[in-house]
Structures are given as structure tokens and as C-alpha cells.
Image 1 (cartoon, rainbow, N blue to C red):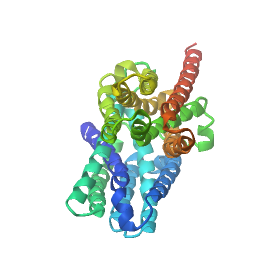
Image 2 (tube, one colour; image 1 turned 30 degrees about the vertical axis):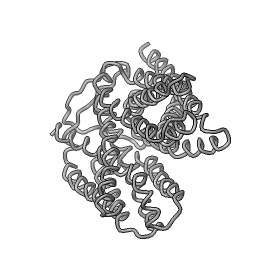
Image 3 (cartoon, one colour; image 1 turned 60 degrees about the vertical axis):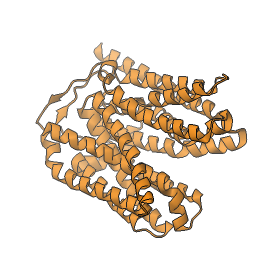
Image 4 (cartoon, rainbow, N blue to C red; image 1 turned 180 degrees about the horizontal axis):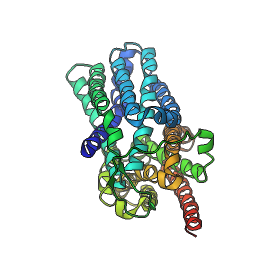
Length: 408
């Protein structure tokens, strides 16, 4: 049962990534069919982001009441319904309506699954699971491309992914009894130590509700929220703007820039698979620290005034590889940093901070670049790296001080 539940969780993470690239991949065709300006895609993403933030903040109360298995199944079911709704939408306002359950479902399942894995599984699984998200996000553009090439239209791509989500919903519903019977427990240890796994068939103890107002006042929580905001801000800004920077400021050909911009995303996915092999030995703190430093090195490489573009292009790949372990390590360290009894509430807030960073930072950079030019891109990334690194290191100092007092 242990292996079966773990396999289901892996598949669920692939499912989480599947819808995330569909709008971007299909929008050049979608906006023409819907007869709307290309820029209104931002309205859809804002609605989805608003839903994810709301459901992330509510995840602690909902998961505590209904259990992670049922919350995961229902949330995936909501995204499935939304995707099928997209496939039958002939007007933009219909997409906006379906974006509401899409966002609500995505945020709830993200927070619930991340907390479950952080509490019960070793660091390697957190990295591999988030690599599975990247795998799902990489698959859906190919589904969209196939649908358009085959003359089936963008609606068929949404229908295909929606039906896959329906199948996963049924699998998750059938797995609900496993979540109570199979309870691999990750022991409470320092985030600098290797994780171990044991199997405990007893149910987890009931947790008291942790209000958001109390969770945000837990010492260190504002620091990790700032660090998480910074990381997700730099990741999405790089994904959206790196190619434009390479073309406009470095004179790289559009085809080459697009290829290396995609390598940034592939670097994140591949980096998480590789990080899984060393995460238990290195520990979450060093994974976060090393990741931010590597992104900073990559950003510096983008600015070096050398006679070849190879250094800048390699710098983008280095930044992608450096980004890989940060998100999983921040999530995985939450139960140790703030206590298992608080982890679901804190992870819900972290998810909200992540979505806020992902939503706000790219358009903010666009507004700044409209005034300063795209050459400011590496500086913008470096500022976010500095914010994330400083905040995470301040949290480490606080946690070490707390552990020292406790041991004494």
C-alpha cells in the first residue's frame, strides 16, 4: 500500500503540471478564435491566480476537516471540470467563469499535497515530485501542438487534458482509504541532516485548527514568505522575459534565444531529478542556499561583457539548474522550521506568497523595462536572489538559535 500511495502522489504531481502550460501554448490561436486582444490572457491568469491564493489560504481548515485524500481528489475533479469547460467555451467570458474552479482546485491540491509530502516523506521525494510537475508542464504544450497540427483545434487539447484529469480523479477517489492506512512518517530532524523513512500504520494525531492570523505571527514565517515570494518571482520573470532580453540586449537570434529560454525550464525539471539523489545528504538549508547562489552566478554571467554570447546562454542554464532545488527544499523544511502542527497552515500561506510572486513580478519587470530597457533584466533577477538568500539565511539563524535554546 505504501508503494501504491506513493505512485498515486507522483501521478498527481504530474497532473498538477499538465494544465499550467496550456493557456500559454494555445493563446496565439485561442485569442483569434475568441475575437479578443492577445493581451487579455492576463485577465485569465489573474483570475486563476486569485483562486489559487484564496484556496491556498483556506487549505489548512479544509484539509483538517476533510482529509488530504478527499481534498486532493475533489480539487483535481474541479480542475478537470474547468478544463472540460474550457473545451466547450466559445466566448472569452466563459473562459473567465471556468477559470474560477480551475484556480480554486489547483491551489487546494497544491497546498494539501505539498504538506503531506513534507511531513511524511524524505527530501528526495519532494524534489522528484516537483520534477514530475515540470514533466506535466512540459507535456501539455505538445498536446496543444498536436491538436492544432491535426486540425482539431485548441478545444481538443483542453478536452484531452481534462479527460486525463477525470481519470486521475477516479483513481484518487478510490485511493482515499489508503491515506489513513498508509502513513510513512518522516522523523523530526534538522534540515541539515539526512532524512529517513519509516512506516507507521497508526493514524496521525488530530490537529487543532491554526488560524491564519496566528500562523503569520509564528517567528520566522514572514522571513520564509519573503524568500518564497522572491524565488517564485525570479522563476516566472526569467521564464517570461529571458528570451526577450537575449534578443533585445545581447543580440542573440530569436531562435537561439527561444531554445535557451526553454532550457531554463528544462534545467529546473532536470535539476530536481538530480537534486533528489543528493538532497537527503546535503539537507534543505544547503539546497536553498546553494540554489540561490547558483541563480546569482547565472545572472552575473548574463551581464559579463565578453565577445561571445555563449557565456550568457550558459548562465541562463546555470540559473535554471540553480532554481531547481529551492522550491522543494523550502516546502520540505517547513515542518522542521515551524512544527508539524503548524505546517499545513504555513504551507498554505507559502503557496499564496508563491502565487503572488509569480503573478506580480513579471508585469512589474515589464513596466520597469518599458522605462529602462530590457538590459535591467539580470539586475532585477539579482535583486530577487539577494532578497531570497538574505531572508532564508535570517530564518536559518533564528531556527539554529531556537534549537540551541531547546537543547540547553
